Image 1 (tube, helix red, strand yellow):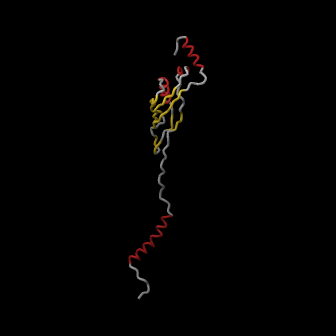
Image 2 (cartoon, rainbow, N blue to C red):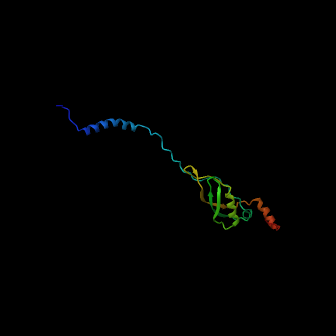
Image 3 (tube, helix red, strand yellow):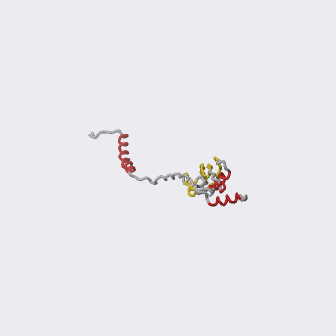
Length: 151
């Protein structure tokens, strides 16, 4: 009779499988991933590139009349103003019109989502403040008005 202990065959099979699998499992811990997961492209926000002030209507500038127009501006994926609607009027049609015409030339770096340029809507206040020093052209306008040939 043998002095070695007898184990059921299921225990021996599990022990052999564990002994064989252990090096494979440990080796997998040190293994680098096959391919890194693709990095998500971070979204970007709309960025103004060129937004010069709109032309001030000369008659209002010379009469020291100012105001504020709020526009609802739609910027297309090309970074250009696609539309400019009056959201809140200044109460003066020439100022509202000047603001709308002025923003049509503005350019932006478009907002992106997933690396794709997007259309963006935003409210833009346009302020018209008469300058502290009256421009020389106003004196010419005054003279034209005085002579009855106003603009």
